[in-house]
Image (tube, rainbow, N blue to C red; front, side, top):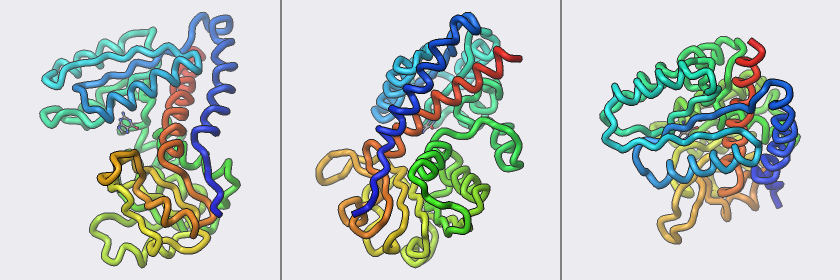
Length: 285
Ligand code: GUN
């Protein structure tokens, strides 16, 4: 029987601590942190994520504004909106929900956000700071994953971590955080030959490929720690499922995260933490 790391429970505990902290802010600083989320279009997954962020903000006492814009918004209009929010002293955090429509240059939009308000940790200056071990805003999903491992008492130093997926949002930064925690890190991806031979070497396996039930029982080592970042619809049942075939893998491993209720809630929890951090840096100058 694997130990199941509940991101739902851990995030609830962390949000309660943050709520107590934020409750003191009006007296300390005259206001609470303000997070602005921009949602372009109506991709159902993005709508669901943005709703989750608004709900978490309400729980923590963070002011949340969600700005919805049509799929047809021009890049110039979106950049104009970001410029307004950058200049607005009442805004502490700006998050542009991804993916953006194809006619918009995502890199240009991310780079336009004031680095001090970049609660996602996606701005090039934040990314550079992460890779140079400088203080920075950490991207939420990798930060949440490390928190889950630490809370579950998983030793990282000296272990072999295999990260499957090389995205800017998850794969690359989580590999860097595991390296910084002194793991030996292998990055694998869709073009890795004999992927199973690589994933079977993992003491810690992080899977972020966006393919339902992609990791089967024969791809994990017995006793491994498995972190499932995927949020997919099972094509057979229509239910939410991860990138890991949970029913097949759970009996083999020592620690695993469920989907839903695993990494997802921790991502949102770390977004709240990042918003508070940006707020405190701003109000404390
Ligand atoms: N889309 C999927 N994950 C994320 C995330 O962490 N941040 C943003 N902005 N968009 C996303």
